[in-house]
Structures are given as C-alpha cells and as structure tokens.
Amino acid sequence: MSDDSKQRDKFVPYVPSSKSLPELTVTAIVLGIILAVVFGAANAYLGLRIGLTVSASIPAAVISMAILRGLFRRNSILENNIVQTMTTAGEAVGAGAVFTLPALFLWDVDVSQGLIIFVVLTGGFLGVFMMVPLRQLLIVREHEILPYPEGTACAEVLKSGEEGGNSAKLIGIGLLIGGGFKALGDGFKLFKTEVETGITNFKNAVVGIDTLPALLGVGYIIGPRVAGQMLGGGLLAWIVLIPAIGFFGGGSDAAIFPADAPISELDAWGIWEGYIRYIGAGAVAVAGLITLVKSLPTLFSSAFATFKGVRDNRGNLQAAPIRTEQDIPMKYVLIGILALVLIIAFVPVTQIGIIGAIAIAIFGFLFVSVASRIVGVVGSSSSPVSGMTIATLLIVTVVYKATGFSGMDGMVAALLVAAIICTALAVAGDISQDLKTGYIVGGTPWKQQVAMMIGVVASGSLIGFILILMDNAYTMGSADLPAPKAALMKILAEGVLGGDLPWDLIFIGAAIAVTLEFFGMNSLVVAVGIYLPVHVSTPIMIGGFVRFFIEKFSKTKEALAERTDRGTLFASGLIAGEALIGVVIAILLYFEVNIPENALFPSALLPFILFLLLAVLLGYVSFKGSKKRV
Image (cartoon, rainbow, N blue to C red; front, side, top):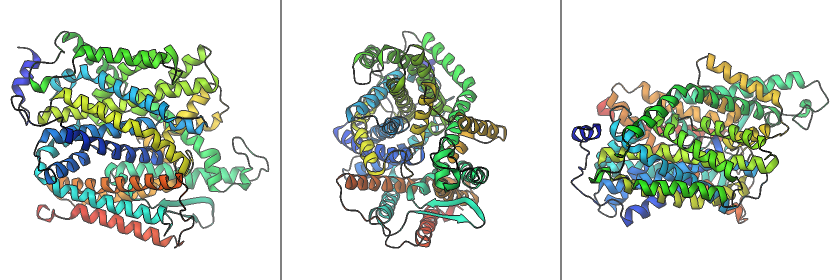
C-alpha cells in the first residue's frame, strides 16, 4: 500500500469524498470577489502605511458564513471554504504589489494600471500553478508533519460555523467603528490623527502616536512581544539616533550628504528624512537577509524533501479519481507555467527580457516550494518572503549589471522581476494554507485552485487603481504613505546599479541589525521600527498591551482562546473599516472634493483620549461573553 493510500485510509475529512456539497457556485464566486477586493484594498493600505499585512482567511470565513447562512439560507461549508480561499488571494496580491511596486512611483516612473495588472496577474498565476504539484506532497503526505497553523485554524472556524453570525457581528461593529473613527479624523478633520510632543531639555527627541484604529488592531493581532520590539526600534531612532545626529552635527554650517540643509537647521523630521531612513533601510535589508540565512537549513531541507517527493511520486502526482484529490491536471499546469514565462519574456509590457523571465522561472520554482513548506511550519506571517524577494532583487540586479543592462531601465526591470516573484510567493503561501483548510474540511482541490485564480484576477484588476489613487491622494514615500518595503527595494536597486547612495548610513543600519541578532531579538521587526516613524509603532504597542492583558488575566486556555478570537475578529474589523474609508478619502481627493485641511479641535488630548477609549473597547469586546470560562 502506498503512502498516499495509507494517508487516505487514516484521515477522513469533515465532508467525506463520497459526499458532494455546493462548492464553486456563482454565489460563492460573487461573494469571494467582493471580499477579495475589500481585503486586498485593506492590506494594500496597511502595507503602504506600515509594511505589514494581516491574514484575511478567518474574517472572510466568518463573514461568508454569516452572509450565506443568514441572508441566503445556504448551509455548505465548502462554499464558505471557496469564499475564504478567494479572499486570501486579495490579501496576497495586495502584499506582493505594495511591497515592491510603489518603488516605481518613488522613481517618478510613468506607471500604468496595465503594467501593475500584468505584474500581479503573472506572479499570482505562477504562485498557484507552481503550488499545484506540491499539494500531494506537502498537504496530503505530510498532513501530520506540517501543521499549516492559519489553514488549520480556519478549518476549525468553518467546522464550528454555527457561531458564524455572532462572530460576524464583531467584524461588522469593528468595521463601522474603525471606518467612523477614520472618517471623523482624516475625513471631516474633527481632530488630529497624528499627535507628537518633544521631550523637555532633550533637543530633537520626539515621541508621538498616529491615533488610527488599524494600527491598534494590528498590534492586538501580532501581540505584545513583536509590537514591543517594533516600538523599541522606533524609540532607538527617535530618542537616540536623531538627538545624537543633531548633537554631533549641529555645529556645522555645511550640509552633510545626503541631506540638503545643515543639520543645525533640521528638526527631528528633517533628520529622520535625511539620515534615519537610510539607516533604517540598511537595517531592514540586512535583517531580511539574516532572516533568510537563518531559514537556510529549512530552505535546503524543504527543497530537498520537495524534489525527492516529486521524484518518488513521479507518475503518481496526477490527481486520484476521488473528489478530494482532484488537482488541476498536470498538463494544464505545465502549459500554464511555460506560457506565463514566455509571455513575461517577450511581451513588451515590462521590458525585463529573457534574462528576467529565466530568473523568474528559476527563483519562482525554488522559492515557491520553500515558501509553501515554510508556511506549513511557522505560518504565513513568519515566512521570510521579504528576504527571498531581497535576495532575488540583488541577484537579478547584479546579473543585469553584468550584461550591461543598467540605469533606470535596469532598475525598473529588476524591480519588476522582484515584484512578480514576491506576488508568486505571497500567493503560493496563502493557497498552501487554503488547501490545508480544504483538505481538513473536504474541499475539492481543483475548485480551490481555480477560485484562487479568480480571486487573483479580481483583486489584481483593481490593485493598480488603488496604488495610483493612493499616490495621487497621499504621495508615495511621504509620512502619510511611507511604503517602507518598496522604498527599501528602490534603495537596493539604486545601490547595485550605480545610484549615489550614502553607504555609510546603510552600513550603520546593517551593523545595527547584526547587533540586534546577537541580543537575541527579531532584527527584522526592530529594523522596521527604526525605518518607520515612532508614531506608527506607538499605537501598535498599545494594541499589543491590550493583547497582553487578555493573556495575563485569562486563567484557562479555553478562555484565552475565546477571548483572543473575539478580539482578533473585532481588530480585523477595525483594520478593514479604516482601510476602506482611507480608500474613499483618496477617491474624494482624486476628484478634488473639498476636504478640510485643519482640525476643528486641534488639541492633541482629544484624539489621544479617544484612541485610549477605543483600546479599552477592544479589551472589553475580548473579555465579554467568556466570564464563565475564567
């Protein structure tokens, strides 16, 4: 008996293969497209603000259950699984786009929606196609070995779907509150959403907070440890490095590269813009590579195990006739991959050429297999996608330079290669989690794979509009829209292909990242905190504090699980609500609708108190309803 046969005999999904339920239906597709666009926009907004995205699978599953059961009286767990699969496509496309493509805006390149759509669609389809032959190996044969935490958790949510209506209320309430807070603050300008203050007798030392619901929600989701390390990076920059630079450079009347004005004339924001962003970029780049290097044992073992599994199962990877093992036929997968590589090589949309297409084929297959396995162990949020994208960008820029392809054309081409790879990795990691969910609940693999591609098309078709809209409204690279990951890609491409960069500052940041590793800290998280204004890290830390108190005062695992789940759903609503209103405000600005410029209540105390009340509400929602389990 083969290993696959033994696995089939041992594991029985929630909906057995002998039973068929409505799955890839018109209703599920329409709802999935809507949620893919919504969560794609939300994650694009988050990625541009703080360089992080959040998982959409569980909120999407809850919303799907509430709508399909509550409004349409449909009771198919497999339809809900299709909806959450399509929704994660929006999340993945948003991440792949905003981590790379905003660099084009920073270069003042004439970016068309067609170019952005081409990049994310080719990357997204490659991510799906390249994951198909790995499903039998990673999801089926190693079901007991690779937990795929988000996928398993989502399956449990779907199986306990009778609570979906109540859970959906939490998301809905969070969405209304998050959106309302954003509208009152940044829309109607009733109060300031950015609050900051100096420190007495401490020149250029500044602390501040962006009183935004999405950042509170992110902090709750990522927890106090990660949030604390991110704030540590912000404090290192704003109350250590900035005052130090101001102190030692304040005596010179000459401008010191790369700033255009003497340090004596710069305030804290000027020093941050002129110097700290380069230090932070060096720290993020090296921390990303360190994360990748630390993953090398897993990377090599994953690649070896994957190739060995494909070799051992040669001829057996074709889908078995039973419903729960039917993948997209391998011949269509191979044709799809080959067609995409040829399109990338010869269609003159990107101008990346044959070299870039070959790099995409090689790194795509290698890193997709690695990413699909790594997310099975550590989850999607801890997958070193940034590190693999940075490695791809550095290698491709070196190859381009060696072949005489340099200057702005070379930098743009290298960035587009990295963008396609980044999108492929994000999509592959997410569909791996989705296929794990489907394996547990009894979904049909090929229908999930098709649903993922529909979600990629839906969200990918609008992501270009969202990026262009955001740039017109807020300006890429500004304090309102720093696009940290993309700004890093820009700096690396410029550095390798001959740009004039302050390498001493880059190396200082790199040294900080290495030092942080010796301290046993997550250098990438701290580096992101250094790169971003401390105003972003502070509200995230407050969300982390709320999560800390939930964990501290929950005496049983059951109470803790229930409370964190409730809080996560409410926090997801806060994130989605603010993000959607942020897009609406951008649309109004794009069409030159008159929006107030000055806050009606300029006091910094009001928004701070409102934000603290929102944090208290988040804690209350988490605790509510679980007292009997304490």
